[in-house]
Amino acid sequence: MVVYLQVNNLTKTFGDLILFRNISFGISEGQRIALIAQNGSGKTTLLNILSGKEDYDHGEIVFRQGIRVGYLEQDPQFPQEHTVLEACFHTGDETVRVIAEYEKAMASDDQEKLESLFLRMEQLQAWDYEHKIKQILTQLKITDFNQKIRELSGGQLKRVALANVLIQEPDLLILDEPTNHLDLEMTEWLEDYLKKNNRALLMVTHDRYFLDRVCNEILEIDNKQLYQYKGNYSYYLEKKQERMESQAAEMETAQNLYKKELEWMRRQPQARATKAKARKDAFYHLEDKVKTSFRNEQVNLGVQASYIGSKIFEAEHVYKSFGDLKILEDFNYTFSRYEKMGIIGNNGTGKSTFIKILLGEIQPDKGIIDIGETVRFGYYSQDGLQFDGQMKVIDVIRDIAEEISLGNGKKLSASQFLQHFLFTPETQYNYVYKLSGGEKRRLYLCSILIKNPNFLVLDEPTNDLDIVTLNVLEEYLKDFKGCVIVISHDRYFMDKVVDHLLVFKGNAEIKDFPGNYTDYRDWKEECEKEEKKSLSVKTENIDKNNSKPVREKANNKLTFKEKREFDSLGIEIEELEKEKRELEVSLNSGNLSSDVLIRTSTRMGEIMELIEEKTFRWLELSEKEG
Image (cartoon, rainbow, N blue to C red; front, side, top):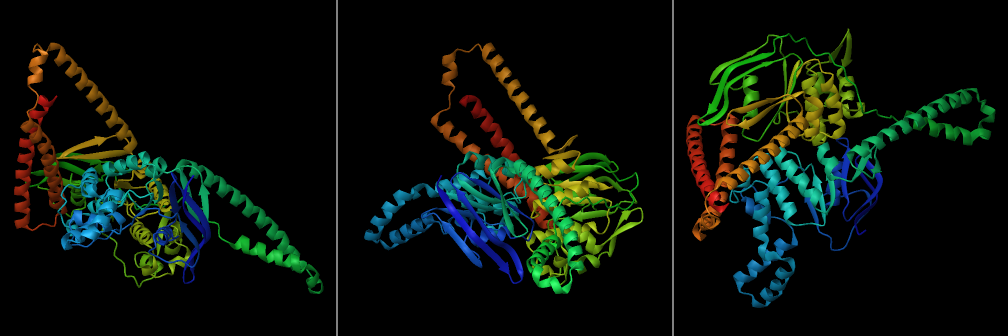
């Protein structure tokens, strides 16, 4: 097997903080490796080191000569004034450099250089590069190639960055949180793409279903050391449990031995000290081992939520629309005590608007949302992360509450609560600006939970949180004595936390589904199979009853002009659908002025008419095509 990358005895520190020490691993052709570690343990730092964006203290990094490496950063950056297509050419890739040189030579009419570059263009197959870019952008649902980067949403920007990496067709893909900001459809597309592709892969992700289905090996950074597991995520969980049990047994043995040695040391006369120096040295080594903290990361935090009555919220005949875009239409729902609901749906279908109506940030057009008097919301939003970087972690939480109730008169201090969410006593006295992005997200989560709400509304809580923290949060929510609404694209998280779903399908169509995401996906697949089967039977019956001769059917085939129109309509409809989704996002934001709102609503009506008209014509032609 061809080795693409070999890392030997790599160490990285920031001042007194050691991220990892003397770690070694290799990546070979066909290996698909996931890197797992707690936030702040150096996952992104390690990827940045491998990509050459950060230095390291000592060690050795050796790439196979001539290997092509593609790196997707967690927060990709492009020039704001570039278009989508220009951004895809804004890369250090050799093919792009040769294309740029060729165009420069063409402009200067440098015939000698053109000849050498022509051969290089042939070798790199660069002539159809732009076509490849457009093809993969379209697969990622990006069809407006001239849209400015500054106008893109977080999800669109991530997809452009992803396209930028995949277009290069690297031998080794390095991906940092590739599913962040991607919806379920795009996550499943990427999952399928990587499974079918034989490229080597090193990836950091919190999406455990994605990890389990794509990767065949796990690397874990724990306590500054690297552990290797030759299997997927399910295998890793098994083997890590065995490792933890082994370490726990070893620790218990060491503690028993330490007690005996401590008794011996206390009895040891000073006169005989020199004769037992070796044993004393062994004792001090053992003492260090016993004092090394061994974290049990599966924390059970049975916090007593503040009292919540039997009345939670009732929605009665609620309507909400923006121009022709319907979000809610005669929506009725009674939320039950201790209910845990998941909300899923494509962007622009009204999920965020629904949450904001519930929280009172947006008013419905008609109808009533009646909130119970005892309800105390805790809202985790995507844009709610605002801390003073010069504050210490512990002070951020103490400014909110000094303690939290566990019930039965028991309480946890702010420091103890932070420890449950994996902030060590040392980290608690760090300044906020020193925290990693994931650690800041974890602190934001703690700042909400310490308020002891009884109704949690979590909007994409899994973005930027590591798997260890997600496990702690899942255990917390499982035992949470209150209500929960979760909007998330993390399928694993949804399966563990929610007991039923509201599925936003768009145009005010909302399905209440009794079950988790996997249940819904299985049900949806069965429905699609039945629909295809029914359509197949219907087609067969039509063919059997068709009295027209076969020759006449052949004469109904599309003309050349109609064929071109048919192909063109497919592209036009896709572009209109894309514009419609973007308008829906704008209308759902609640940030538009009245003038812009009117113009956007008017355009939405025009778009819907065009889609209907072109779809009808497309169906007309598709019948002849069939």
